[in-house]
Image (cartoon, rainbow over all chains, first blue to last red; front, side, top):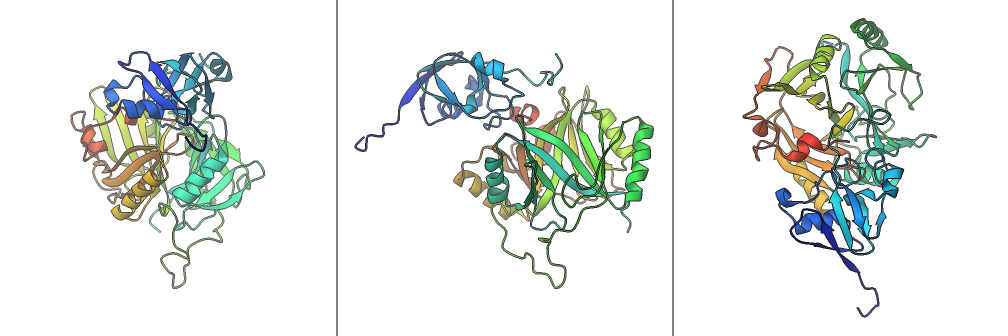
Length: 114
Length: 306
């Protein structure tokens, strides 16, 4: 672009999806996934609140770099975050990525139990 | 007055991940007025048509969800009498001193069998931003954002819903306008302490203490449409709607705050008197009960909570 501000975009591969998803570096991975798979039955990651609170889009990043916005520690602890767990609605790609769903379901015991 | 004991929902304290984003959402978008910020960082809000000091409290935390939901009673004598009945039922009651929240008297608190903390209180100061009462205009200054008149009700998710129904109806004197009974048990109950279709509702869910949504009352269907316009303009995460509930008959949009707590804007709804029979929905029709136009439940309704 003439002003030199190029938006970088990356290829995100979701386990179980039939095709990769393109995601800009300024775009949350979950939103790019929803745009690529508008039919919820075909989505490789569940969509919930899209705001980091409910845990529906909990994923494990198996490859690639990304930045993370604030998300509920009920769903991704600091230790889990260090292992590559994240909420897809809170991460922005910094490279091509490979992601798989790590949804825990509603039966996860609250903190202090389990 | 003929309504004695508990009068109405009084306070919802909600956990948010980022206070600045939450204030923009609840004040600029939903249209609540910010009435104060405590030394501990909690933010106090009220709807433009609410008389008392506050109805919504935001607390910054590392998880989303609800800390407690409180009902206002007609007198301290009523609160004291409820305390005896709650303890006799077998729940432990604790005290929150007057002034723990600004303008608010002493509260009692207890955990119901679904894992939610419920509180009761008798006193809250009138707000200096309260609606006029002498030759009033419909509002003092034009409402902002989605024009929420008041905090209206909440829907909570947790286990032991039969016990919850027993406690609210037998101990706290709620009545139950509507329910969903599945072949394997009760899925959901809508209960009221007033004659609104619901002041609080519960859905059976394995994990205790969860929030499904906190609802705000709008004047009419046109305002629901205006709220939807704002959601597209400001890229607010929308769940379902605009649509209508068969249950309560309210007109509605479900959407999410910036921390993932579900909100509802709600208009209409029938009037529920204590002598009315209970409306009952079965598993073949529950979709129409929850979303009257879509006539089916979506996955998010049953599973996405904070």
